[in-house]
Length: 122
Image 1: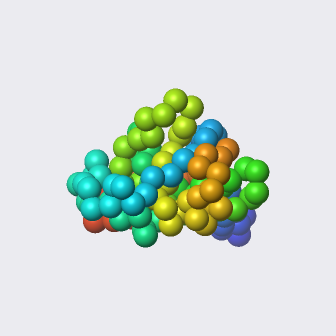
Image 2: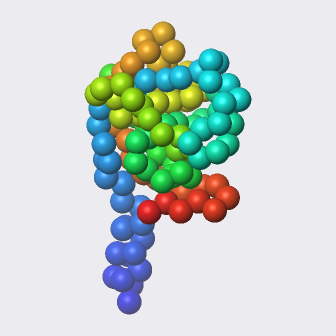
């Protein structure tokens, strides 16, 4: 019985696998207040992001590969539409990654949870 508890604890604490690697970009003030694909207004001061396929409400840990900085964001929009990019971050999320000046940077994504009213992250 003890070994079963140990296995359950270890599996629950195991790092989540990398979902995707590629380039991240950010979008900001010019979209403030406009509806996102999920229907909520875009707010650059929130830690949100656009992803082409992940369910709205999915929480993703984004790690910038060239400096190691991380941020957790909630998917609430669709995009990016630029070739080679895998996620568009809000201004606040981009600032955490020190991405504002660079504009684009290599990242990896890990799904870490689900949040939001009626969120169905599967």
